[in-house]
Image 1 (tube, rainbow, N blue to C red):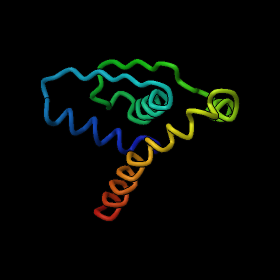
Image 2 (cartoon, one colour):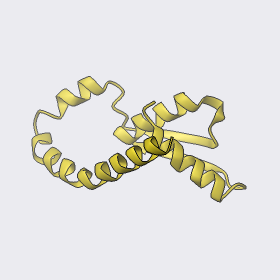
Image 3 (cartoon, rainbow, N blue to C red):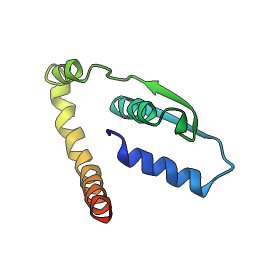
Image 4 (cartoon, rainbow, N blue to C red):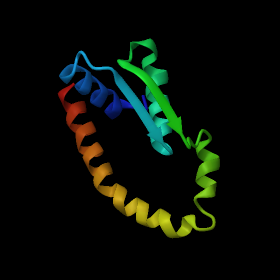
Length: 100
């Protein structure tokens, strides 16, 4: 279950706007997570259409690429900016797990 937070966001949007058509777009790792969500939900998703852009389909191979070249400059900065997002996700996941 790789897309729990995304599942809740999609459900929230669908509940708040029941007559709306929902589209989704994912870029890079977000594209990978989007496709994971869509695979898990199947036809049960309220998303009508989705696009996956620059998806690192092979995460192990993509990880190796992050250790070379210019990636060594921007990866630490990207990680620093992702820390607040990770903290929120961690809090949400633990809060929801305790509520059942």
